[in-house]
Image (cartoon, rainbow, N blue to C red; front, top):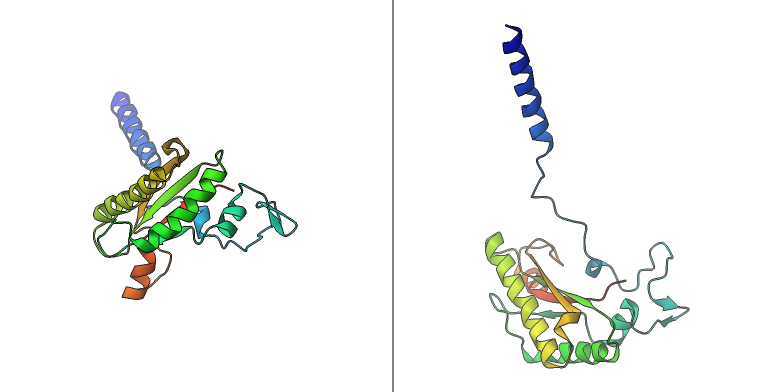
Length: 175
């Protein structure tokens, strides 16, 4: 009987600890820096500014120097249109002036479609931007891509206006 009780206690202990090792896959990591307001000074720590001037090569310098840090896409598309090319040309010029800066290109989608579809679409959008910047002389070794799919909307809403702002790729210069 003692052997049976010991075995039962051991099985119960293993079952209890197995539940503790389970990681929740539906939790997202903290919001990326691209969600911050460029003008926010936060806690007063250095964010690439010296007085009123941005430090060359900093995130603040990037946001002041380029037309935008993001480009937008049509529904179910990852084609870089003329408007996006103008924004990406300004980004490429800045990146070529600052050859030591590495960037992350985030691909995003609107809320429609499955999670898997939107992750794949966000990936194609990020890669389209990377490929365009590479065609303008930016080394691919300086760029990494990530897809957030529909997980990180820029705007909450369930209409075309919100969806249009969420179909995007964002070039993020680290702090």
